Image 1 (cartoon, one colour):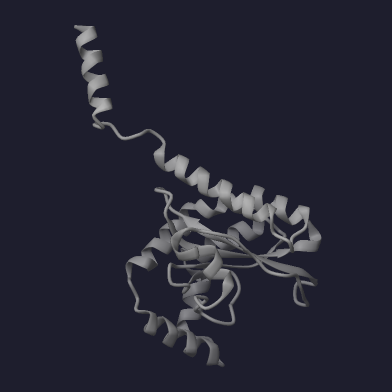
Image 2 (spheres, rainbow, N blue to C red):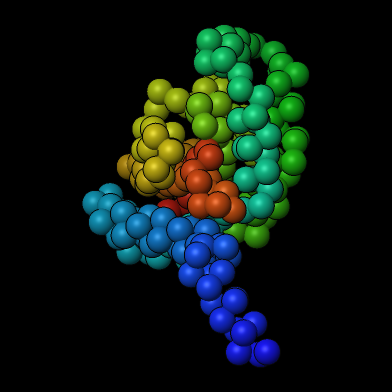
Length: 205
């Protein structure tokens, strides 16, 4: 009887009745490994910046709050023309807009602020959806839509994921050399759903 049950289970497995265990985890691990290799070959990042990005930032690509908030915004399927209209209003605004407060205080923004409190070398951090629209931030960005900029284009990479590391710039407000590192947001199935840009006090590592 035991042999018959074992053979039945083996047959079902071979026939594909059971899903491969850890398939999604393997996909995520492979993507993170590729991101790490891209960081290693970045010509404009020091070894300390590369090590920090691999150890501290790549794990945040699968941050649960980031994934949930990005997917929620993606599900709204906002037309690109509407996103660009919001962007134009955002850029020209002289007074605070309701959407400014929304993006500074939603669940995504609160998670960013929590992480920035733990990783003190982080400066401006913002999360973007699958069209480059802002999902949440800890500091008010100059624009709402990042879809026309390398920080989103290279990190989202058409849904394949990638890395963008900017050149260092001196930030007077932070009194530090600021360097932006952008990475994909990866969901539980290993799909790239958005992107995140981390501002880093590169000279304080």
